[in-house]
Amino acid sequence: MNVFLSAVVSLTVVGMTSCGPISEIKNLKNLDLSPPVLITLRTLDDRTLELTLSEPSALKADSCTIEPDLMIFSARSIESRLVMAVEAQTPGQKYLLKATLEDQRHNSVDILAVFYGFNPQLPSVKINEFTTRGTGNHPDVVELKVKEEGNMGGLVLYQGTESNWKDRLVFPAFPVIAGDFILVHFKPQGIPEEIDETEHRGVSGGLDACDTAFDFWIRDGTGISGNNGVLSLYVRPGGPIADAVLYSNRTSESDQRYMGFGMRNTMERAIELYENRGWTATDEFIRPEDGINPDGSAGTRSICRRKGEDTDSREDWYIVPTRHASFGEENSEELYTP
Image (cartoon, rainbow, N blue to C red; front, side, top):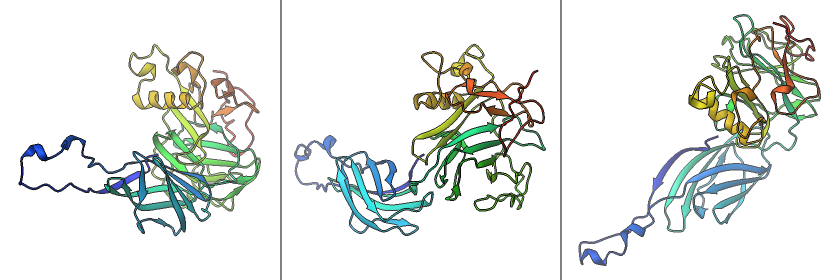
């Protein structure tokens, strides 16, 4: 997540006059005229924020606000980090931090940065079933299965990875229990009936809306990449990975470019997934062959997780026969035979 949204830079400039030779101006190359840069902003817990900066810096007095209103109690500088104590955040709430940072040379920068409220009750959630080759009546959808009681606030599902994605959904705060299903529809029709459900199931309309699951819709979504891609869950934007899948019908020999993945984005997402231990490889580096092969899947032949399996590999997954997609229910255990 790129939390550095915008900056208005103000520099402290050393004054110079025309009196005296140029030799009296001391080592212009060593003048520090660069303001600090915000590298990351993350929530350490529900009352603490951490800003990682390019150099030791402080908050300019009375310059910092958080919207929606969140009281700031203190900010202390620890080398190139700023640790802020704030009042308790709402889980999953989107916040906007506005502040002026100033380095030791008084170079300053105004920042606007987004973060999401820390969730101390986040449950274990897994990707359980998905389709990437949906049809007009059965568009692409991803099913999540909740493994324990908790609150979904801030959990984020990407088509892609945290630093390279096409679509994402940051879940609002709502309670769930073990066994709940959540469906994320990636190609909505854009009709009013497509309602994100946080209280009552069965409220939403739209293609493949399900009365036994919480339905969510990727607004303006155009679907999931059919042959090669990554789906990933993170505990919050900027947080650690919770679950992921890599799928591909290509091989290392399919294309000399991009390690056989055929596209730069797919290759980069696969590498990031592997480096963050979200997916395993059979060799020293990730290959298309390490992904789930989606060939044979369709709008009603979904790709399902084997019951109880979580090895972060293609071995956890299988394709079900036609009309055995089971979104909102336990996965069918029947296997598709071409």
